[in-house]
Amino acid sequence: MVDFFLMLWAAIPPLLLLGYYYYRVPFAPPLLRLLMFFIIGAISGILALSLEWIFEIVVNWVLDWYQIKRCLPPSRCASTLFGVALRQLVEVGSIEEGCKLAAVVFPTCYLQRRYRLLPSTVFLFTIGVALGFTAEENWIYLYHGTASILDRAIGTPVHAMFSAPWGYGLAIYISSNTRLNRDRKFIFRAWLNSVICHALVNVLSSAWRYPLPLRFLSYGLFPFLLWMFWRLEQLLRKVQGKPAILLISDGTPQRRYWQRSLVVFALVLGGNAIFGLFLLARILSPLSPSKLFDADILWFIFSRFLLNLFFGVLAWGIYRYLRHSTRRRYF
Image (tube, rainbow, N blue to C red; front, side, top):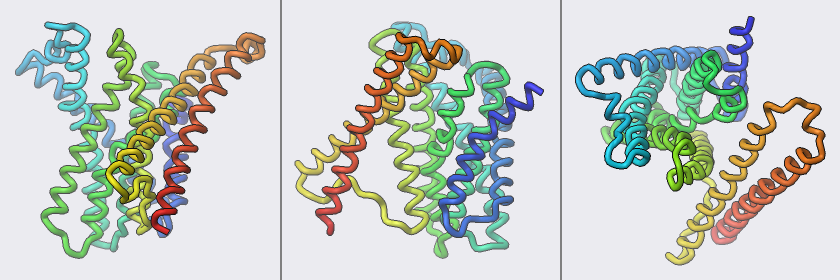
């Protein structure tokens, strides 16, 4: 019974997000077909886990991989982080993004022989596979007790954000009448981009375990995730034939530099506002409901919530200013 509830907690958040994107996309594929890709994505997660285990054994047999991952000399902390980054790039990012790509390509090629697939359909297949992969990963973490339900729920869209670049490239290539060699190269470059982003997120998420100044890297995690979410939304608009939302106009170099600076500032503010609310939820989650009404704890909740809300509203205000200034220039 406990395993059943863990499976529900692992699957429900990805399924809800999949339903959200399904109802957002016009002319979406049949729901059962999309759920098939969700299941294939979960199977690809099991395959990726097995391949990572085999990779560890084989490479450690050829090289001293465990020592390479630790990379102790000459500076223990910095070189250990380098070892973590190397493993995430060579092993975790490459294998997981490769398994997800294969999980989309093979069934999509089969369906393409029978149906004409729209770019938005292929992109939705990518999201379905990525969220199925997330559900399998959630179950592994929850079953072994290495992450909380809150942690996994927050990370629900992450694999979809990783896979968005190559999902977009694949959508354009498969739906095109004239498939050019440059489109294939674009898919590989987009997949490589996904691998790098995957590795970078995993490195930033582990940076809090290290002493200062490396611990400050963790404050770049949520701004980077926010940017990847923005990229996912932009690519989703493109595959639907909608114009991209512009925040940087074609003005003078000084104006573009100013707008880019505002975009980065908004990402830092908004990302760390979400990070602050996430930390607040993690702090409060072990407390019993009765303790939440203590005066000191209520003041702590109120002050932290208002502080993060202020940064979030400020980031939203910068975003609206950039949207308004870009519209004013073009219209």
